[in-house]
Length: 295
Image (tube, rainbow, N blue to C red):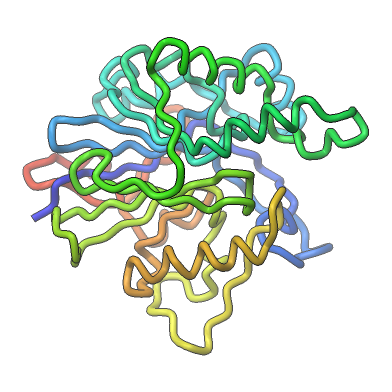
């Protein structure tokens, strides 16, 4: 029995991203392709997403150009590949507030957004710092934070303090403070609906960039495995490693069940297809009765 279908939808990509940003300590080891994606979760009469991408206009476009993003497509185009529209989305879990994850809230008019309270409040604090400390804002569009406050005013933003169980049936939120960002979080799906689930998936946000952060992609991690955290952190790599251990423990150390959305090699592990826009659709699992969108 599976309650939810999960798809990772690429909406743009950076063809040449410094590997040291993806894998801590990988200095002078060249570049990797970095897909920009969000996740769709469909089932139990809900359409939810993890993150919403960014809007290719104003400061969002400035940041996208600065990071070398190519082939950007809007949510209407991307979601149509799996038969959905932005208006169908009722719930959004924001893993963190970097521009490529929190920059498109206006395209989802019917959604309620969940974010860690520490995430949004600390970015307000960071915005107030002198310009000499602006490195911390390198991947944040201040306009996104303001739009997040607007969501709160409109009663469409829920600020979460730590873990939150059954936000939707079988879907839990978990906090990783002072890690990749001030209040990053990951989403756990207990896809059989059980408290002690035998079918758990973790949607890692940017706490994990690629399978290499877990060391043994697709394998059961043993006591000799060493995690290598992501390179970019406003908090600490120690906190990233601790969050990685907790995520892995939730899936019984079966690393293929921890989904890194920036991973180009999802295609090696899950059914995938390339859309007519040249973007990848990865099908992580299907709910009972759901038709494949990649077959």
